[in-house]
Image 1 (cartoon, helix red, strand yellow):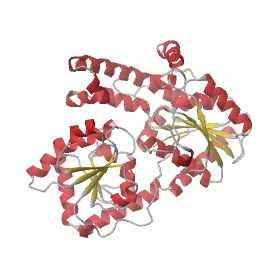
Image 2 (cartoon, rainbow, N blue to C red; image 1 turned 45 degrees about the horizontal axis):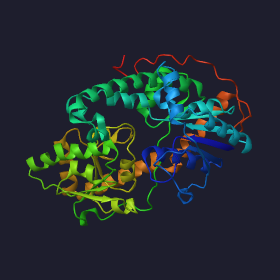
Image 3 (tube, rainbow, N blue to C red; image 1 turned 90 degrees about the horizontal axis):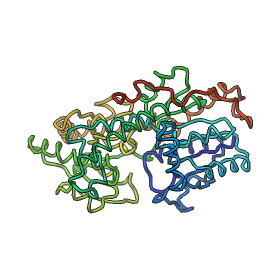
Image 4 (cartoon, rainbow, N blue to C red; image 1 turned 180 degrees about the vertical axis):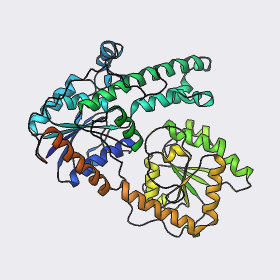
Amino acid sequence: MRILFITTRPPYGRMTGHKMGLRTYVQALQAMGHTVIVASFAIPGDEVAPADNDLGAETHFLALPSRRRILGNILRQHLTNTLSLNECLYVCPAAAEHINQLIDRRSIDFVFVDMIRTARYGQQAKRPWMLDHDDLLSERYAAWASKQGSEQKAILGYLEPVIPKSLHAPTRWVFQRLLRREARILAKRELYWTQQAPASSLRTDQEVTLLRRHLPSAQVYRMSVSVPIPPRTAGELARRPMDCMFIGGLTYQPNLDALIAYLRDIVPAFERMNITVPTLKVIGAAPAELRQQVMHPRLEFLGYVPDVTAELQAAQCFFAPIVSGTGVKIKVLEALAAGVPVIGYPMGLSGINGQPGRDFLLAETASDFVRCFKRLRDDPEFAVAVGVAGRALAIKQHSLDAAVNVLRPELEMAFRRLGLASGLAPTTPPSPDLVSPDLALPGLAPGLA
């Protein structure tokens, strides 16, 4: 088939977890023998050069709506609770026309869309289509809006330095209410678009279960992110310095939150337990103004590195003291694939279907974190066993082969639901049953009523 994949970002250039999810779909579809054409919105600050296209997929760039158009979208459709703010940022007649021209000119058989932000383009395509949610935005926004106490201070994120200190408290109050409102609208829109799409995917079993609870007849499946599997596992752990690794640019708030939590909670736990604090090497962007918030003599900022796997496999273990954010953490999957033992808080290991104590080490508290580290340090054979088991888990669940094994039967099921022959698609799919866009989704974003 010739498949058009409409994405909110190009699946090339500097990688993020979202982009890795997009690449998983493109590579899996290509491995199944389909031709994939990408139509991506051109995001300022995320420009890519032709040389960045390492997937061999024909790529077209879509124009974002103008500021005037976005304002009109908000006034007409967001303030009336018709569309989420996320959708308003991508509603653009010029983009819709460009997509329709591509579909006709390139004889597209099937369409995939990225998140509910672009779902309307799949519905308008007059072709069979499927929706990749990535994650449930409503859950992400609800979690952020529910922060209390010291965690609430981080809600302003990067805006905090530019907002006068006297306005921090009222601005946080406004932000929380805006996030709650958006979460409520997103919860309804996620249900609406899941019903409209013949099939849709998420990244974790937990989110799939949550959506199926409200839509038991919908085809919703888990499409795990695939990561490159290095040809060899990390070796000779016992002979290396006891250095640890963390991946994540400080320009992404959950990464900054993780390092703040590490210095605030885990480093003092090392000191209380009379265990030498290991050197923690941090890969990723670390602008000076953000680095100042997490300065410590045992933190070493490497910035951008040309070979992440080589750096990972030179470390004794990977730290994931992650306390915010949602979804599966790509950095953790990369460490598992490299054969490096992982220690993480529950949020850092969420969505990974492995066995704690065998595939990775789960720490509920800062003291647990230090005890896990000590065990790896003092028992090299155990450290090797954890690294080997974690790598086997990554191969089984997060390799390209694993993605193909998931996607192939889901596509077959979608074809059957649409009454199509396997691998074929008519020019006009059956009309979907219309559902009210205001359909409530009780419980999908708890505590926001």
